[in-house]
Length: 376
Ligand code: AMP
Image 1 (cartoon, rainbow, N blue to C red):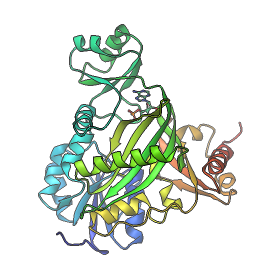
Image 2: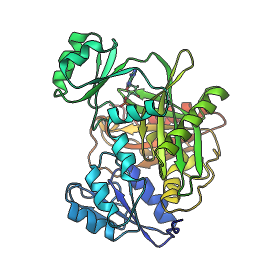
Image 3: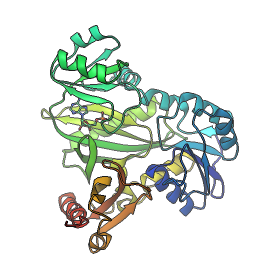
């Protein structure tokens, strides 16, 4: 049994975005030191970390030097090369282990893994050459196997001809062609697994997307008990089969017939779990810290129904948003990630609203976000 990594020790985070920032805030609150590693400077994580290392993920000497100064390395960005995780593992604990990244950073490996453990997902074909496109189900969604998130590297295709054109645009690389799922809604489960195999989850939440990017999450989801039970059991099976130590999110489609299909896995805290920062006894970020440090997992109890609304760079189109207006909502919490440049579609922050019901919280979160807009 490995020893507990206690407050005062240094934790390394590979990646430097908002997930690392919120992890670092949770870790520093508990008295840990945080080191972050990424190719960028003055990053969301770096702004609140003790140490910000700027280097390429391919620079394995830098990775080893970084890992040698911390007790455990974790991730906030899963597209870190496998060799980077291995180099870190030569110096300290890496949690979750590199194999978890290896499986989840590639849609083909991820789908083969899910199929292997008997978890339902949308029908798909592997596309390695042009001829493979003929076997696809149409309409479908063509997605690159590697390095995709928030709808990047994917195209909706209605016919083989469209798929051929889209595959060309995506650079003729290995892809998955999924059937287009006629879902009733999208839901997710954020869950955690400790060093000792303990399991905890935040229940099922409702996710609404815009332009393939998460827009609003409502907790708890408006789904029946049977769906909750099944979704949580799938999440448990995934975390156990991958032997995850840390937090992992399972995103699902809930079809009109009430079937749950796994869309994708994220082996880290997830945007659909941001509400936990304000609305749960233990946030997903503290949970990740507890898990990777070998501490007991904290209670995931939801203190009040909540809704999270993302703030994308588009909100800055008419100038700095009206922060005072959103802060005039007493049950709304503002989170900004310290990003230096607001680009369209870029996640700049979020709002969390709490209320008596999820539906009320959603109305408040949306109204607060609307109040930010500068009227031109
Ligand atoms: P992904 O990056 O795979 O999570 O896709 C981003 C979003 O695109 C999802 O949350 C869905 O809203 C939509 N999407 C992706 N794949 C499919 C599919 N096979 N059928 C229907 N919608 C999809």
